[in-house]
Image 1 (cartoon, rainbow, N blue to C red):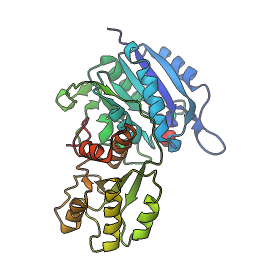
Image 2 (image 1 turned 45 degrees about the horizontal axis):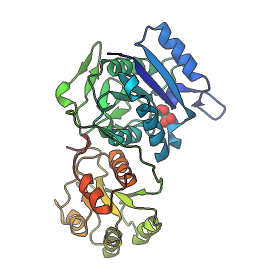
Image 3 (image 1 turned 120 degrees about the vertical axis):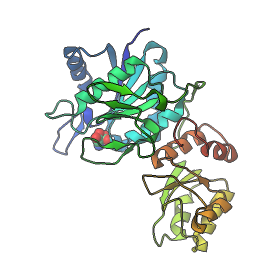
Image 4 (image 1 turned 90 degrees about the horizontal axis):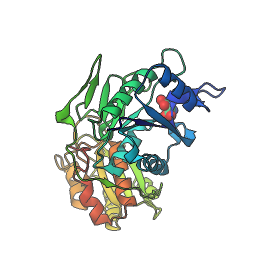
Length: 333
Ligand code: ASP
């Protein structure tokens, strides 16, 4: 088996340099990275850079297709893949890739850094080295996100800390591996192999909207959000176990009309830990009555990416709703 790994650099702090406006992606990072990897005797690898490199705050759903395309066009040539990505939207991209590469038979490990590789005290080299070893070993056959001392399931991960080195966690899912002196993979936590179901859909960036519920949210704000016919999916970020202000008839009516005209509405919680239990309270049961899909313990990032991929894949509302409520690749318990 050829244990060569492909590193796909998309941008992010790991490959940035200072500018008068703060950190920006750096030209020539691939060459600097290659030299450093060679000097430190890393596993055999090739480096590909996406153009243009981005701060991941600029990520669009179309980038997910570019990333997946770059991996799939080289899928048979490598034992595994490391995707270098900005931390701001890494959880969103790792989630999206997990739905585009269902049944992946090779590791796809997202990583990045809080401090650029070429600056003092960087956390990048440790992440990179561990990600390369996991990708070369081939045991973890799914999309993971490696940060700090852990490998997390990509579609369970969230960036929870903005400046700490352990920026990511997967609050509803145990880590897939612990990174210490040894890299300890937990085989019982990995996805069971399934049939490959790769997809490279064309995304419409307007297809999915996100609506946080807040005290006093006016129905007309929701109407305005859903006004465009391009919006075909809505992620609710509701309170607690999935509750919304059911006393506001206009608000509930707005959501019900959206469902009736074919908008797929998925309910996630504003709480990072624990599942949606739609109907534990009357304030959540109303969503069952109007056809909102409960999101279980899916992260908002995974819910958003899942809905985008399913809609872009061409399913009608009924088919998308049916798939949304069940786990496709470890994204919900
Ligand atoms: N703004 C950066 C990005 O997401 C942050 C990072 O990479 O840590 O690209």
